[in-house]
Amino acid sequence: MAVYTEVTDDDLAAFMAAYDIGDVVSFKGIAEGVENSNYLLVTTRARFILTLYEKRVERGDLPFFLGLMEHLAGRGIECPLPVRGRDGEALRMLCGRPAALVTFLDGVSVRRPTARHCAALGQALAELHAAAEGFPIRRPNALSVAGWRPLAEAARGRSDAVLDGLDAEISAELDHLEAAFARLDLPGGVIHADLFPNNVLFLGERLSGLIDFYFACDDAFAYDVAICLNAWCFEPDLSFNVTKGRALLAAYHAARPLSGPEVDALPTLARGAAIRFLLTRLVDWLDTPPGALVKKLDPLEYLKKLRFHQQAGSAEAFGWRP
Ligand SMILES: Nc1ncnc2c1ncn2[C@@H]1O[C@H](COP(=O)(O)OP(=O)(O)OP(=O)(O)O)[C@@H](O)[C@H]1O
Ligand SMILES: N[C@@H](CCO)C(=O)O
Image 1 (tube, helix red, strand yellow):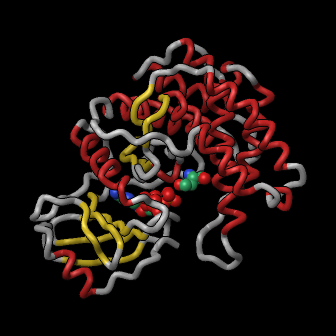
Image 2 (spheres, protein in one colour; image 1 turned 60 degrees about the vertical axis):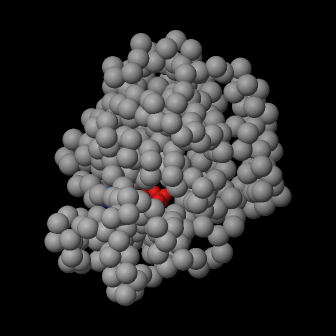
């Protein structure tokens, strides 16, 4: 359930006075999502999403996120476009929270992506990487390799309650990854960094929108590919589907060719991407009180994906090589 902050009719009326987007027809909270409060706003002119940014989003990062969506939408990427008010601002306060309106995108997210969905995603990811070029604001990735040890420390001593031996397994993996990532020198720019199936909308098999840019940052492009391989190409039994892996990688490569070093780095990047989501899920799992409304995501799903990559060790395991 993702309505942490209730917006009353009076709050909304005062907020709407800053815009020239028609009159309110309906306004209701959206249950999906975990980070922020989201509402669907329908006016006499169009549909919008109103987001109130809750505590996990750093206020100083909002100009990056909103500016990025505006930059990408201006370059033909199907992503939400922040709506500017009469004063030219896209970001303002509502109910004590920073808030913004963005355009509504048609489509639904898929729970069980097919190889065709994976191909569409691969192409869209490559187009996003290319379209972000020239975006002037920088945002280092706080959840890359330097951020993993502090997360592991936050869980230390408590992880073994989730799985016996987990502390030691994470620590050994971090020793390996810190050395392996230090050797990488890959092309990069702005990445989405959380392009899971729930953040991609489809109309049938046509990709109709990319949403939720609130983890976007600067990092290696191939790291974003690895995040997507993990999120899109494993089956519910956590076996890796090589047909989906091939579809995703070949479509990405056709739109933005992956270099030899990027392909060679994919197994390491996939291990890194697995431990990143293992760690954030683990800390959330341990820190979320029982009975909280937030949906807890399973950290062990990502431990199993990590173990797959530890065994696999080469890009062939993803079903594809250029
Ligand atoms: N521009 C948009 N157009 C259409 N639907 C949207 C749009 N933005 C958000 N949504 C809907 O709202 C839901 C929650 O949005 P979003 O994923 O941005 O929330 P969140 O709180 O950041 O969640 P999480 O981080 O868990 O993905 C989405 O699953 C989608 O159904
Ligand atoms: N995509 C993240 C949740 C944060 O958006 C996860 O699956 O752990």
